Image (tube, rainbow, N blue to C red):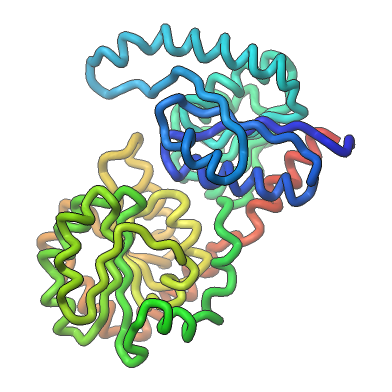
Length: 364
C-alpha cells in the first residue's frame, strides 16, 4: 500500500451524515499521516462549514433532495443531478482517489455513482436501521457496506455488509470515570438526579414545548435539568434558566461531561445520538422526530426498544403519557439499571477503526 493514499469522502445535509464522515477522515489521517483527503458535499448545506472547521478541504455540488410535494426544487432536480454527475466526474479525474467513501445524503449519491462507473473502490456507511434512498440505490455497485444495525438484508446485498456500528466521539467511551468532573463543570448538586434533555444541534420544537409544559412537575421530583434546546429555540426558552436547578443551553460543547452527569436522558433518535447513547449506557426515553424521511428515527428507536434497552414515546403520545412514564422511570431504580445494562450491550465502540480496516483491505 502506498505511503500517501488518496481518499475522497462524501456525505452531508445533516450532522448525522457529516460527523461520521469526519470521524472516518480523522482515523484515516491517524493511520496514514501523509494521506490526501478531500470531501465533496452539497453547496448550500452545513458540511460546507463543518468540514473546513475540522481541517479538511471540501468541494460543493449543486444538488438537493427531492421534496415530498410538487415544488420548483423538484422541477430542477434532473438539471441539478446532471450538473452534479459531471462535476463529480471532473473532481474524480483530477483527484484520482484510491477509494471513495459515502456516508449518505444526495451529494454522496452523485460522487459514488460516478466512482463505481470509473472502477474506483467504494464504501458506503449506513447509520440508520432503515436506509435512506441514496444508499439503497448505491448499494448494488458499492464494494462494501458498513452498517450499524442488524437485519438489513432486505435493503442491501448480504455478502457486501459488515456490521461495524456508527463512528462516535472517542471521548464518550469512558464517561463513567468523569462523574465528579461533570458535576463541577455544570455546577450541579451531587445529591440530586440529573435529567438531560437533548433536541439535536438545531433543536426539537415539540420536545422544547413538552419540557416547558412539564418542567414544574419534573422539578417537584427533586431533580435538576440540563436542557439543550438548540440554537433555533434558545431565545424562546432561555428564560427557564431563571428557575432553580434548570440550565437551558443552545449547544453543549462537552458531550462527554454532560453524559457523565446524566441519570436519565430524554432525546431524539437520530442515528448518531442512538449510537452515542448505547456507548454511554444511560436510561433513555426516545422521542423520535416524525418529520424525517422514511420515519427512520422511529425505526432507530424501535430497534433499541426491541432489545428492552430504552423507552419510546411518539410525539402523539406525549400529552397523555409523558408524565406517567417519566415519574415511574424516575422512581424505579431496577428499571433504570436494566435499561442501562441492556443499552450498553448494543454499543459498538470500535466502529471507526473497523470501517477504516475495511477501506484499507479494499485498496491493499
